Image (cartoon, rainbow, N blue to C red; front, side, top):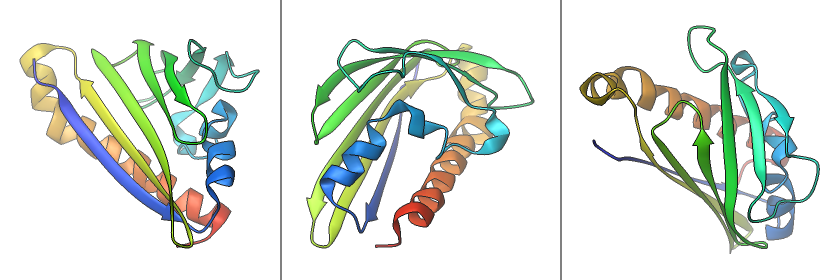
Length: 153
């Protein structure tokens, strides 16, 4: 089975502390997720992020199909990075690294997602048609939302 990688960077004119405070709060994920996805946190977002934290969501990524998604925060280095991994959900593998780095006049946020699609060859056929464009759409939406919230770099 093929493992895919999605990579995205965004610069914002805010401090590293501001970026960390926003991005490390699971409740803010709803703010930067497209509304049509019906993103709703069920549990696990009631305290600051920590390694071992389990967060449960309901999300409707395609065709109005509600999906339960359970992630675990597996690594946290305060102010620098965190990693979430899917424990239950739509992917055969989901490993998402979030990095925050100070740059002149702001921060660089970097997301690296390694993922595997279920359903073997059928899943691989759906990747360029459905999965990759959906990830690009979600992260493009996030870019616009973050620029509205914090300004353009």
